[in-house]
Length: 251
Length: 251
Image 1 (cartoon, rainbow over the protein chains, first blue to last red):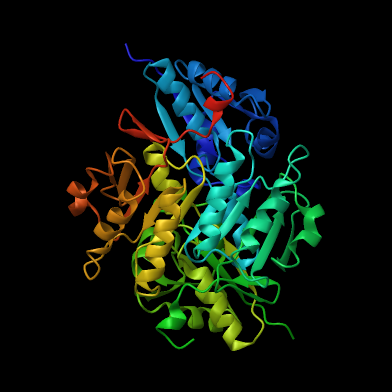
Image 2 (image 1 turned 180 degrees about the horizontal axis):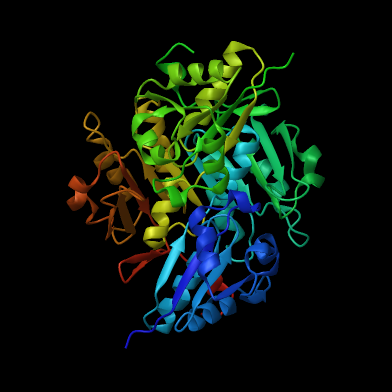
């Protein structure tokens, strides 16, 4: 007999419940058990009345994924992920653990609005052409690989989104990354810093590569940093990256 | 006196209404006028009863953005964009036109789930580490710049999402791009092809760089192609890109 359980891997979006998808909200509402990092659980807690809630913490992702899979054999379970479930989220580790357990699981990934999208929307259209997303956390990725990726996208013409730019233990990575990007991009390249996007105390700064390290204190692990491409410009405290219409049409 | 109008630039998500955010749906519901490409209007038409609908077509983005801005002086207007409003969407051109008109407009961008996120969610966790998004359309971007960007991300360790891989008039770009990526990546690198994501006739294929051109006929302008990084692998018709937990934990 097939078990009746299911695991939803739910991207809950950047913060505010209204920035969740209808499908993500409905998955939470139909689940028996919700499991997630406490700070993300707190963002959706008012949807969770009457549910079993299992709170976990950073650094416990492997254990959390395994527990969610086991519970999903007989229950409807949602494991929640901030932003989109893919962008450095829980989707990967859940599939890795499922593979290692060599068993059958019903798994559905539900997409959410990523911080790339949400933070971009606060400052105009900074990423409106080819873009790349790079995490500056070297907890799970060797720093050399991060540097290699940064150099590649800075030397070609990508808009760049930096995730996890800084934590208390890694407070030099952001500065080092800006120095790498400066080797390839003009000092006037627009840079947006968006902190606590879609949450209390949301704030942003629009500046340039030349000036950005003056705002080093505004950057923490709840910050996304968006860097324009070679054509990006600042207009009224917003960043515009042209899609290319000016090459074909009169604007 | 300040005008009473406002322009929402709404990312409606990949297709199905349940994959819209609550905020995007509410923006449409509170708008007087909805303007957009006909195919996107059709995806949300059942939300638009009683509203003035202005249908436009591909290639008319400049005209559409200008019209939306002018109407927003005295009306609540939503200009709609497939997926997220930033990812090759309407956000950029609206800000460019607003800049050129040198007037005050009330503009709010509302994020949506991008095709990158939605199509990833159908095939496991293909993009679960640093990733780059490249459009293969050379209508607005010179082909040389596209090649430069592709080479940069293929030669470093990005997962790669290809947008607009093919149209009737540009049916060689996809093949040329795969050849470029093959110069840098193993033939066994996983590749996912997702067509009509979140719409009728959604379908996907999981294959490898070596085999992908056998599926050339499955690729059209409603397709997203996702290419793993150097560590990605295929498991049960899904793609897993490890986040890096295996370097620190026992999985």
